[in-house]
Length: 415
Ligand SMILES: C[S@@+](CC[C@H](N)C(=O)[O-])C[C@H]1O[C@@H](n2cnc3c(N)ncnc32)[C@H](O)[C@@H]1O
Image 1 (tube, rainbow, N blue to C red):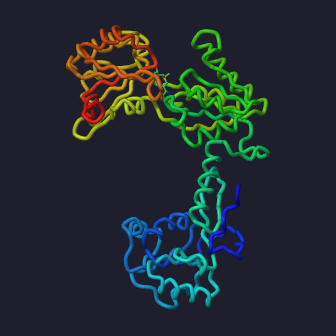
Image 2: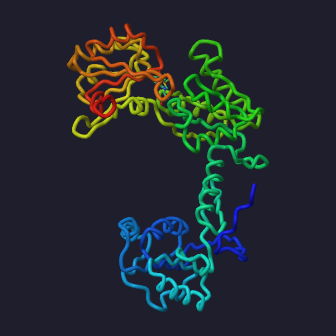
Image 3: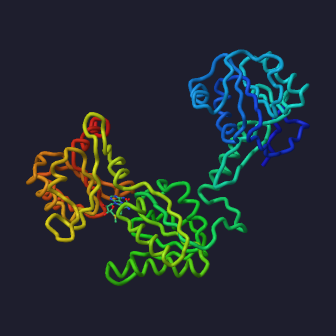
């Protein structure tokens, strides 16, 4: 391996890294184009008193000014503009102006970053990123090299492949983490980070299994679907497992399919932990109710077609005394219905909807094991869905979508 050649502008110059605390301090940005647009958000986040000097700006920079995030002086730079500034960013597309501003900065002893010529600057802007409260800043002198390193470091921190093992970000407690619909890429950045920090993972049947393979050896994985006893008892046993491990000083991730609060018993687990005095973090997940139709080419809403979508659990069917759903009212709605846990009861549900007014020719799609390699989509209508599910051998987990949206993207998805 050969060491990378230093960028010409950095040769013989070693920057001294420092984190500037700019809140309430005057910072001047000269130039309102693409470079400023990219750099301004971090300056705004720092709380600096920002003054932008530029005859014109991009629409995005204009929006920052309109929102009061900076003061825009819509005119060319004039000598004296840097008075009282703590920091200057020069980013016009006119090298002569950039040189003039740099010269004033030098005279006024204000550190000055220059987008066009790093060798003429007195400060270099690092490629930076943030993850979980840590700021990563990389300075190599070559902006592309810096950005690539920054991406590798921030990416590694986010997916847990890079971690400060000696430092524990989390004390004992429980995180209820939505794992998304099944594809391991569809967990949130935060969910993945917490998973990488877990001592114990209590997982569900529908949580993305591939993520478990990445866990370090010492992590104890408990498969909640294998906990014996009946349904209700199983939930109590799960609550107990969460509480016991957290009480023993462990950081426990309860990894769930989809979102923890969409038919996921996340609320029950939170209440049980709260009652036992265990701190709980909840991390939202991408629910199968939206994402599974989406990956099968079905938007749950579409302008001009529907102004509502309703997500219903079909685990108890119409007429069952345990059902809390007013199916008659649901049948009267014209928008999209998304049915979860409804494969077994779809015949009774479809019949009830038709009986109370939803047309029998309303399109229906059943998406089984969405977002996984085994995903399949079967189409029917309310009138035929029971027979189609039977004939095609559709099995849970599946999301069933009822409504005109089922076909709206057909031309693009099935040419
Ligand atoms: C107990 S619910 C949990 C829902 C989950 N909390 C969510 O937000 O997606 C389980 C049901 O979600 C649906 N489901 C979850 N993941 C699915 C997937 N990958 N493909 C199809 N349906 C899925 C099925 O209807 C399944 O029976």
